[in-house]
Length: 516
Image (tube, rainbow, N blue to C red; front, side):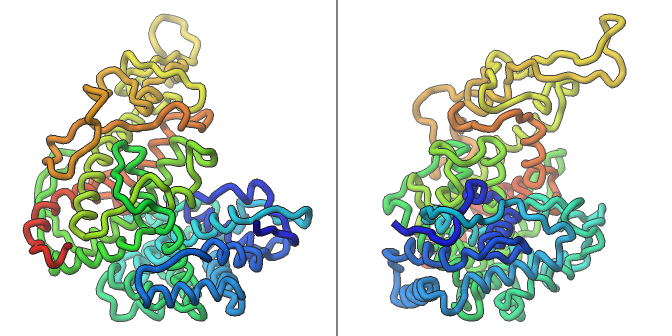
């Protein structure tokens, strides 16, 4: 077993990052580039990564040659591939963040310990950084529409909303005068970004170029992303198994961006859709109309939805025990695999996003209103030890104010009494919201979405380890995904509608040679 003799990773550092901000902090801490006083653990991290990739094989000679270069770069650390990644992240942090405090503890110089887990955590951080930062750079460049936006802009807060969903406190971490142009400039520390974006007409083409341009000497993030993709794909089963609950679909969507077929799927969007076309959409307010949909719309919504789906899992259940896999374990989760053809993967996405939209939008709406305004779940508790109130969807609450009469007074507040319909809903025990039968619960790709059977949430009490949480916590997490019909940030509902609306038309356009 690989041992770490120079430094010891303290337990907080072995807490897996769950968003982009934490992933950046983790890498900066371990590489010693965060301004702290601890020694660098880069060499040990490189050895751990090399060990994890040792037995991994690629699917083609060309990819195997790249994988061998990645293995050698990590094993020898001659090119300083992890140091180069740390330098790029440090440049981004120094340019953008006003508060540079790292959430992880210092490395300590004490007894030795094993580091395979640290290597896995590192490989789990890489996809977060690759997709999160490449998306941010694309959006903040000339092509993406965020270049002129600032963090103080209240009329177009898309940049602010994305950074908040990625784990950044925009009030504490970022100067409000910073703009998208400043973000793009800061990310030019990654040579692969600014050297490949020119002439790329879409985010899909940009991602494809980043993957093709991987180099162990000049493009550390793209190269390490390929290595992480190889590793996590090797951990997945070779036989196909589909998720059947909302929890499982979130796991599936979270790890989708590490599938080798993910970028190929976005290529399929471009091949099939070609020019922009219009699809019929319906708004939650009852409005109907046509929406112009491009391949890039699908690609952008898929990338960001995949990135942020882990936030939902973390908010509801937490991370860090056998029932709640860490992020790197989610990426390599052994229960599920991904279809190997564009058609099959698109069909699966259409079904899962429809089911997720249906349940998560309902959950968001319920958690957006208080008990006294719509009998909803904003103040309802959920978590470890919370009793499920299963007879009614109305949260039983008690008034916290003293009354001179039997009537509630102005500014009267309510708290959850401890028996929570929210907990019952998450654990599929709420009367009227549970499946009609115990069997046949999964959804079917060959059925119209309107014919799908009820999809369970799939969170058992053993899954939900968080403490002292309320519906308002879920509402905050779901807001970037379900906040409005035209949310300027990642809009999970829009993504679901766009995919589902485009499903039939794309299917008809596929002759078989393109999508299979």
